[in-house]
Image 1 (cartoon, rainbow, N blue to C red):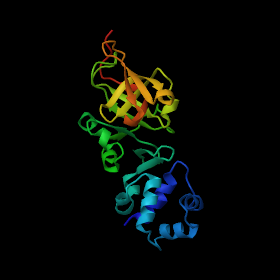
Image 2 (tube, one colour):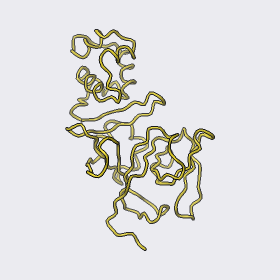
Image 3 (spheres, rainbow, N blue to C red):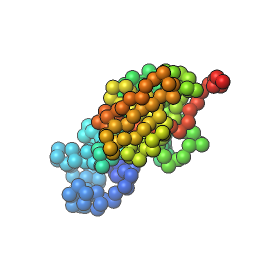
Image 4 (cartoon, one colour):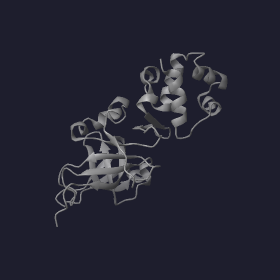
Length: 231
């Protein structure tokens, strides 16, 4: 049972860094109840477990049985729209950059919110990317975004509020049906509830994606290619 230490860890990693008192107020508990859980002097009910798991964006099984400190996995629950980002952190508490390799990219739409899936992804850090932002790397496939070539590695910065993406921005958009695609995004979420995705290769027609079919958005932050782009 890792419940007590996981609650302390998750509270310290949550974007709002809630104190015991603040978390107790948000969830409708007494501070003494939360303190008893964190010290191991008391155990939560099943309803309490569900409420805590929902707040922190983890499963009840992970909350009880997995050492989240050892895995250095940080789940973020966006309360505004219940959007979940599961991410890993280094020992010094810096965000890792996870790389989704070709062999894992097909399962990303199902695994992006799963602690075990994200924890097994290769990780690295780059000194020229900001330490206070979240990045992830994906392989590029296809020919729709020249001069990008198949096999390049694309870096994306996590977008928390999709409605704020400016039209014309290059983004990695994760959808239920298409998986991860790199496109120029035109934002009509507030007016029509869609993003229109446009390729740089004019042979491919623009197409809309409904908000409810979008899983994640990562703004283009750069790419790595072993070969020099063709002229």
